[in-house]
Length: 252
View 1 (cartoon, one colour):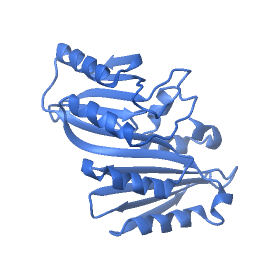
View 2 (cartoon, one colour):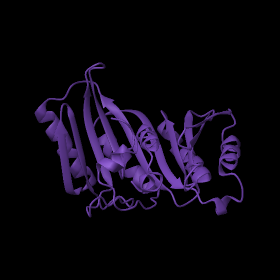
View 3 (cartoon, one colour):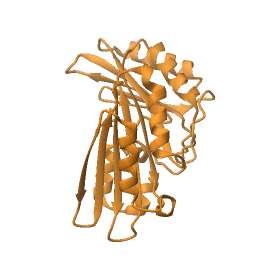
View 4 (cartoon, one colour):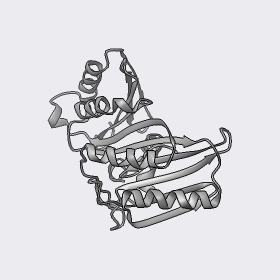
């Protein structure tokens, strides 16, 4: 991951994993992601509902490196002000600094329309002073996507790497044939090519490139812009369904 090339700190690895960016590392991230329009959200939404799953949540996540000269001051203070202006229901913030100089500011906010956001500002204060912002916006109301996109753009502005994930569940355990048929149906729905499939211990993960999605990730020279996954949750006795563009950036 590009972030890790700069900070080279184990605690930052943990931070990124907590934010869901372990997915990029597991895919062998060597390229970059490009901005996508609303069509990407429409494609993964259609694919998700074609699976027959019930909607549970939608997440937009991304990260960007902070250039201090672009802020003309303390980026963390500016980000707090920016977050406060976007969340009328209020924000909370906590700040920690490790012995090796990694300073982390976490800002959490929510609107009155069922939209929650976690903004993490991570800064290496002792060495190269690199700084990054990681933003996660979540909602259990699909109708709030436009508001989520607006909040994301106002906080992150440009030069960000963004992923959209929609997830939910099917109220039963799928048998092998049902799983196979559902995966084929979702691949057909997205017109996916360069398909890569992984299956282990109740998890099936599929990735590939769809002509219907503009957001592109290039791991090891292979273009990927759709990532889909099915996992059986034995506790809730349901099959979880995830669809992300270009990748799934939440724990599954």
